[in-house]
Image (cartoon, rainbow, N blue to C red; front, side, top):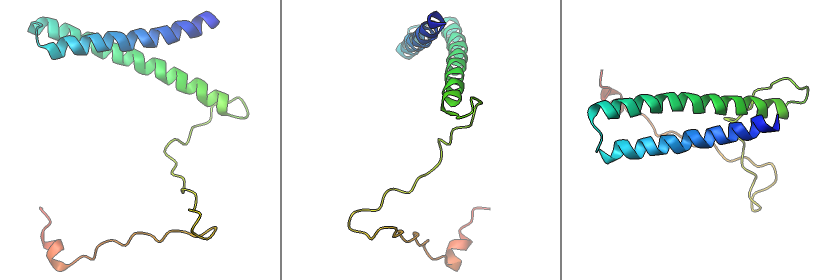
Length: 112
């Protein structure tokens, strides 16, 4: 199994390296249209392979982080309140930003 893990790490590195080569070749603008299309198609396949490797890695991470051994979704997008600054009293909350007042003129500017 250790061989599989190092192989996956190598695979992802190989995917990124090949994608870098393809991007550089396409950006150089020295390929024919047919060669550019072939490289582009190869790049699309490499992106899909890389996404698969990352997805597998994410699943393993979720499994490692879960308490019961089952996969649990990570709350990556969860926004946490920053700690209160030392000058503010403990537990004090910042006031919510006030939206600018809407006037009748603002409502008339709707493009549809």
